Length: 137
Image (cartoon, rainbow, N blue to C red):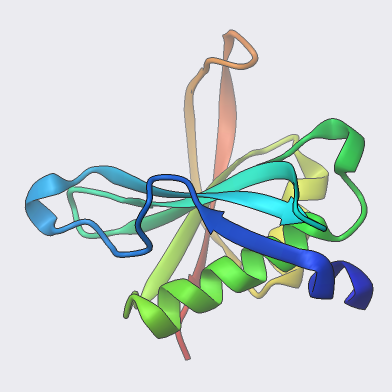
């Protein structure tokens, strides 16, 4: 995994690495996840109207289980806390997405106990989601 971490880079998709001002929220700050200069996925921070910040990510299926998501999210969380002054980051994950839930746990996110059902456009069905949170130390 150390090798994956060294080779993963983030490139801003919307031309900025600045948090959107409150009057422009909700808004995403999106990044391409690059490995050796080649895109393998995306990740980003959603700045919500309520002031909360949520992380999102997707690695292409053929590039999963190589440590790329872990490395990319560690960088993105660091950027959120250190560069953008965010106090906490949340993640909402499908309850049955065991690999993603494990990834968040390895990164220091805590299962808040929050649960909700909502529509999944990708699955075309209502599914259960679990809320995770990490707080800047």
